[in-house]
Length: 246
Image 1 (cartoon, one colour):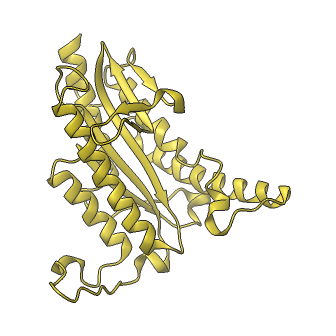
Image 2: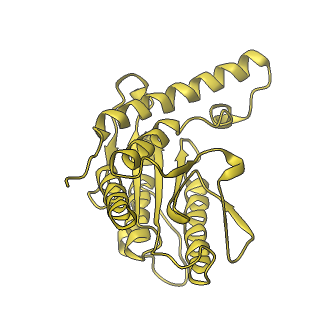
């Protein structure tokens, strides 16, 4: 049976439009209330910016054979046990017949402070995955096949994120591919390596300019870390799980 990708490009454009519109609505609401957060946090605190991508993931799951699976999106039901810490909060969990089918993390970053935020996101992504797989090895989820573990990052396409970045490493050289690489390129390399090292089933970075609030246009930087690769991998995992458990 062919995988159903649920017209993901159209739905991704809707998600990008919603991302920027929700950020702007949150910012305006805080301005009107007189309680504006500093900098870009004014557009973050609504907590709904990535809901369009969440809806896309749910459509993929339902269309490929697990319409009856338990899908959790509410904060109080999104924790999984860890190994180095008691629990970890995810953005989407899928459970079916007592098995953890998928755990997905959705993140975003807009300018201007790409440098510190990139490092923080990198450390979070690596630590989260290492914690989950160690807990999995130690039987935290019972005896079951490896779940799908996904990481999707939405990054603003802006002059600051496209600009070449210099690094200082006085003792040993930086890997060549990072030399002069922009933050967008670094996110793409991060996603590729998260998958190569089997920390995530798949990881992707989606980029879009603020003007995409109207068009919904977005870009993937490489085929390995593209949105198409992400949704295809998720659809394939869901279909295989449905065939195994039905």
